[in-house]
Structure formats: C-alpha cells, structure tokens
Image 1 (cartoon, one colour):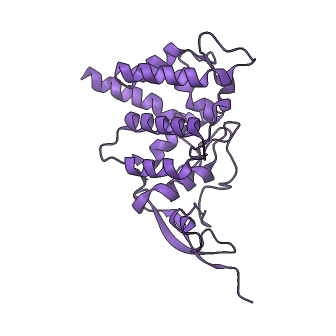
Image 2 (spheres, helix red, strand yellow):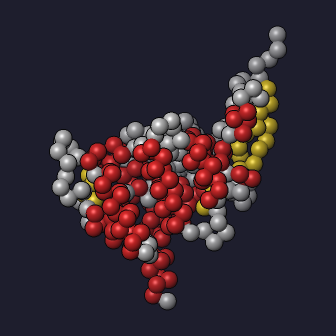
Image 3 (cartoon, one colour):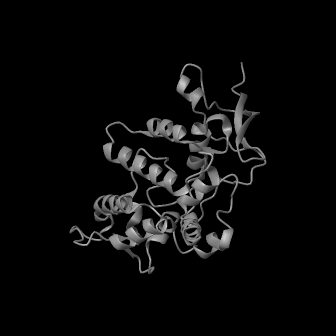
Length: 260
C-alpha cells in the first residue's frame, strides 16, 4: 500500500526576510495537480525548527509571525498592550485621548499626521465612520456623531480580506503567513501593488461588495502610509499595521520630514 506521505514544499525565511522553499515530509497534501489553484497558492507550513509555535491558534494580544513570534518588541509595544486585543491595538492610534471612543475628528487628525492630503483624509474619515460606526454601537440606535466604540471594534470584521483577524479581534498567525506564502511573488519578503491586486482577487468572496471594497481601500491606505521606496511593502511592516504599532512611528517620521 503506497504511503500517504510525500515530499512537499515548506515556507521558510531567508536572511533577507523572504520566503523560500525546502522539502519536508508530511502525512498530508497542501496541493494537488488536479486543482491547479492549490499548486499556485500554497499555504504556510511551519517547519520543525520554527519559533512560531501553534501558528493555527489565534493570539488575543500579540501579532505573532514567523519572524516576530512574540509580536512587536520595539518600544515594548506587545507588553504594554496586553490589555487590548490586536484589533483594538490596530485602532489605538485613532483614539487620541484613549477614552475608548473614536470621533470623526480623531480619524481626520490621524490621517493628517500621516501627511495625507486633506481631500484624501476627508474621504477616508467619511468612509470609515459612515461604514464602521453603527456596528460598534451597544444598542439598536445609530450614533448621530458617527463615533466608533473601541471595545466593539471587532464587529467591523468583514469578508474578502486576509482573514488574519478572527471574529473576536484576535490575530491569526497562520492566516497572516498564508497570505504572504500565497501572494508574495518571487519570495521577496513583501508585497508589491501587483501582488495586492492578485491577493484582492484571490481572497474575494462571491457577491461580497462591501468586503471587497473595504479590503481594497484598506490596502490602498496601507500602501500610501508605508510608501515603500522600492515598491515592496515589507512583511513585518504589514504585520505592524495589524497591531497598529507602526502608526505612531510613521506619524513621528513624517512630522520630522515636515520640519526639515
């Protein structure tokens, strides 16, 4: 009887942070030639020596990846935010006075601190609060001021995205790694605009207009924020977008550039 085990390729990280492939022996298949799409988009398979343990288990407070298994250590971010879920950390920068409520003006100020042109900042503020305020409300009535309640921000989870956040706002390392394993063409350690277009198509759910639109705008905003000189959004920078730690760094960086 033939063995169910067969050599498969596994994502590992090279010195420059890019994923490469080695052969491993697993008792299951992650791709079959009869379904070419599974060959084209292979998921992340943890190796025996990886520091990222239990990749399939969602983290409540840490945005863990293969390169950063303990989350963001810079400025002691992960340790200082143990009282917040990762999705709450994601919006922490927008909550200017940290009172648990994000006003439209808070969002406007955040985008302006990133040096977004005022029409783009105004558009982003309008879209974010028009679409995301109501799901966070504690009752049935909408908020006349279109505020967003941080404690309920997990309710804004939508489809057709990377699936990195779960429905409760936890961070799923497996899904994050899968996204890069599937769409980081040529294993360069990041994503280009072309990679994102491919990913948006690949992740799209049928008839999910809201989710597809939201994911497209989120990735556009991410690219504009990071604005990589080489056109490649680095994997760890994207991870830090999820936990929000890079938002403060970018605001400081752009403010210093403005003062020069």
